[in-house]
Image (cartoon, rainbow, N blue to C red; front, side, top):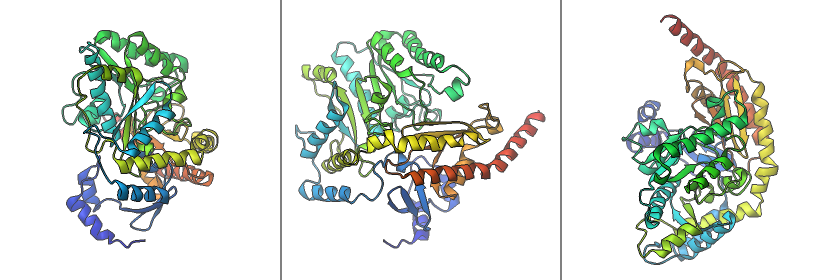
Length: 468
């Protein structure tokens, strides 16, 4: 274990380092970021020696847990043999080919061709360019419009953030770019509270068809969606939603893109989220669990029909990245998938730790601040409300309560994420039953601790409203 001068690291953090998606004034006022120094299993440690149970698997990605020596060893071995080569010059490397074949086998069906990238954002940029190129080759260049959902997350690049439906991201940089339409999300707690599930599923799916008709079916290239909206707040669609959306896409000849960056590789108890929900996409974007976050790599899987169209043309697909199919990342990803298979971790999510997680999270339904709990595989969310039995928010607006409860969780030794007024969780596949129970105990204690502060917030909001 290395010794670190944490005070100096925090100084350098403020002086030189710009963390991702951060309030830089807040970090400067704090005197620097929390410095994470090591990890093992489902636990991370910071520079002050605090052990923190990682309820987020890093950033939705460390599926096999931390400290996997064999992943470090395979990276070392590949670096000695071939540390890097590109795929631009009609070349390929052994690990990239082997990984493509492995992923194609897990996908099955018509999804037999894999394009590698370095991140989920890049995977969706590939989707964007590939889909438009495909329709041009088909003699339908007018088919350019993508339909996505409000509050969806498809990455942070210009194309990815535009495909996503995050209002805060659209407010920066003049997004979204033209040719992207957004429709309602299947978020029953917010947008269909009290509505019968089947009726809400139909209404949410019908919104997709309504937008297709509004812009003209002949102008629509694809619909893109996450099986479960992760960064949107673990939004689990109601039964029947996805088959309805697929039927609408087929009706109008529109490509269906499944963004599996979070849901892929076992997170929902099947290898891919589309398998869990029972639909068949034409394109699949994936990342995170592909390497369990040990090295950057992502992939875009493409159907045979699309690739046949590409091969029938004599035009290059002028798209790619320096690190597409990076041999070290591919070798690590391949071994990561071998670990998931060898240890039967997908089956564990489906039949062991996933059901235990669901029961444990549901035990919080009795808490007076909890309006809803929801889980799907090893994804979970807890909605915080000002009044039990309603979806009314503290302070009269979304986003006031979540950070208060999140901070109490972290102080109590659990890393979770607040998305508006939801506490969301995405633990590693290797988390134990006892660790799940400890997660929920910490969340319950955090809710109790936050109750007084949130009650004061509610009182202040009521006084402000009364003074108008």
